[in-house]
Image (cartoon, rainbow, N blue to C red; front, side):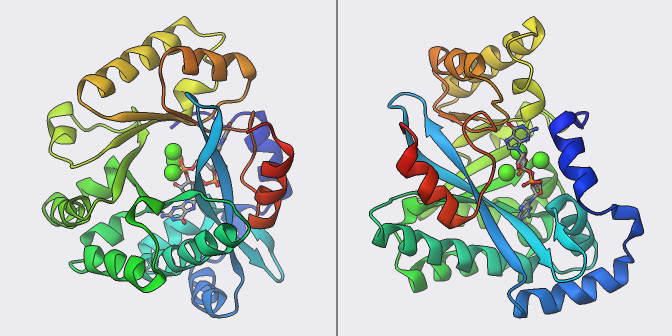
Length: 277
Ligand code: C2E
Ligand code: CA
Ligand code: CA
Ligand code: CA
């Protein structure tokens, strides 16, 4: 994994120390947190680099704990995963995101929303059914939801994962490989996945302007993806130079602190109203 950069360290020190948490207690509290509305989705815009317009967002969960303060997902998602809580959490995330789609639409803002999917979700035999019925229940167009999937999440149970993803893909859902370049899967394995999009990991994007190696990696990844018929999202864009470079290299979507950090739904609407996008 990439080294934490300075921004990460700053936010981290303001938040809690993962080691100080009692894991079991945290997981019991997490169950209650969903019921007590302590979880909140933040949204980070993805800019369509060809038309300079924000067309997508990624939903990222945060836990507003009444005593511990804001708990970042890196602290509680791995624990939730180990303790078998990820189906409940992902269900909450998807319902919340699909409700938000309508709330924004009522304000005249149309945004496709990407949610992160974990290994436990892709081990579940009825995951595909769940996602399709949520879309049906909320009456949103199938294009309004993207699933971001890491290679790790597929490797846990490739057979079932591919089955669930194929079912979703057949209904027209957009599937994206997250953190691309950090895993150990071979291209042969990735080729079996019915994905539409590669998301280049931020560790290759953050230092794009100062690293010739990263430029080579990113431009070849874009070419490779395009040759395989996949769209490309670059995450971790932290400066204007990188944004322009990616647009010039025909990367479809760009996301990162240079545009906006993840913010709550209301702040995102405010940001959109003020930004040139
Ligand atoms: P991820 O899916 O790779 O999400 C991208 C992370 O990079 C986010 O951290 C985001 O705030 C951060 N980021 C975005 N732009 C930049 C940038 O320009 N520079 C830097 N340094 N960082 C940037 P966040 O929100 O703390 O989430 C961390 C991870 O937690 C996510 O990584 C994802 O793996 C997991 N996660 C978050 N929400 C969910 C969720 O609802 N479900 C699941 N299963 N996992 C989630
Ligand atoms: Ca993601
Ligand atoms: Ca990522
Ligand atoms: Ca990640």
